[in-house]
Length: 355
Image (spheres, rainbow, N blue to C red):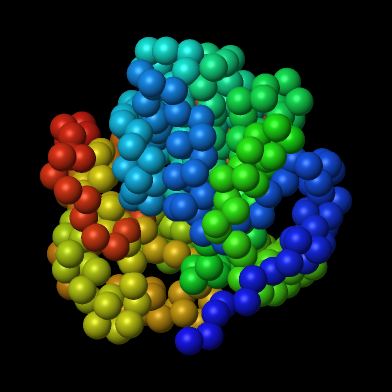
């Protein structure tokens, strides 16, 4: 039986050197990893203190809950008035101890809700004996980072992806960005989690292809605008996010998804998530694939997607620094794979009937 070849310390040093140069930090503040869930589980075990919990500012990813379960850490999902706008005050109000662990995806990887640097700072101040884990999976799309807080708050830990900006869904390679003391401890924890040479090659290709990243980010932005316009013309409610996905609110998520799947177009059904009844998420593809997506919707019965009401909860699609106070507008949703268990369901949002 052949063994998977792993990257040497020298090869990983090459990665950390390039990342340090790109992010203007020291190599001692960086730790590459191959898989998100095991890495997060290690982080939670390392920082957990008896009596603490893992609070999520916004919707949890199933992978985060899995990591917490493996680490034996209790979880609590803290949602705001609107799932599409970060509500840091509710998370602060939910903190019961200064040793709590807080997970915050910025933007949120389910809804695209975002948080400002000041929001992140308030969290770090609230749990000096705990940790704030900031998931910056969509950093290249959003641009706001917790990195300026690293020198002031040793309890801030940033997780980033090497592959998200390229739309590579088959790999979860990324890196931790934090205080050198945290990185040193994580290196010890991860001795049994080496990075394969195959993953290392993928990582290196993403680091040195910034021009390709820029082109993809531009295309995703332009396609998001084009799709939202096209969906609106068909009567489909949609919402642009600072990520690579578009949210849609449809009348029958199951039938809507089945009609798309019949044409080998796949979405995520968010209908089982709290406060996201009728929502689905579509990941932005190439212009040709997006045309096929629109054409398929045109051919399906309108009862699959047309709603008799508008979701008037607050929406924010741009960076906090660029956006005035959130306005109440209609939202056009996004899709996920499978419904979450019923224990995640909450009261339905207040929807206003329209003609």
